[in-house]
Length: 242
Ligand SMILES: [Zn+2]
Image 1 (tube, rainbow, N blue to C red):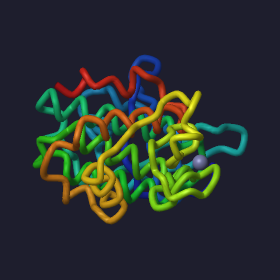
Image 2: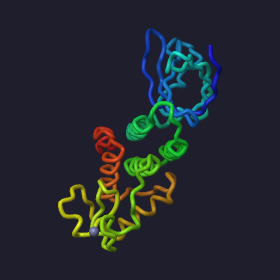
Image 3: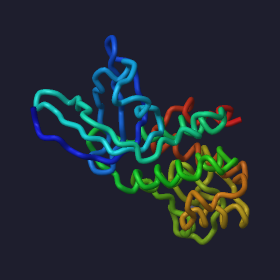
């Protein structure tokens, strides 16, 4: 047996495995995304109990064999069960969207501390926040930046340098002038207030969200995330949040 490793993480999903076990996918602070075999987790009285529910934050003790990419769970210590996020449908849908997006954005074994901290902050705000779609949009916008797709909001036309910011181009990730907008698809024309709001998001934390985002910005963010992060449209469907 190889060495035991201790890691802090969040359960993204769990599924049944064989008669009595589970395989859970967790996103850890230091080791990125891992698949974990929890032997006997479905037996009554299992020491893993309900600790592998999606959204649970825990410290895991795991080990791996050299010939397998699957880790084995040895012990688990719950830091925060987040049970209240699984008891109410709109909150649960937001939780599921955030966890599934984290899954899609985290290749196995690649740590992303920024994304991990963002995930914890969003989970922490989710229960008391009723602006779920905005909270999810906030998560997407920041996750895009953390994944290397920071939009350009301060510059003028990205193609000619003109000061004219006629429309935000999803594909270019910034503004274009009226001349360069011609023939472009997925263009968002923002007023000063909307642009200011979008710029403010860079400095906001999940706990600052206290109103619904303007609907044009929710659309823009989802388009942006779908284009640059290659997220499935089913993940971004707004009807899931109502
Ligand atoms: Zn231009």
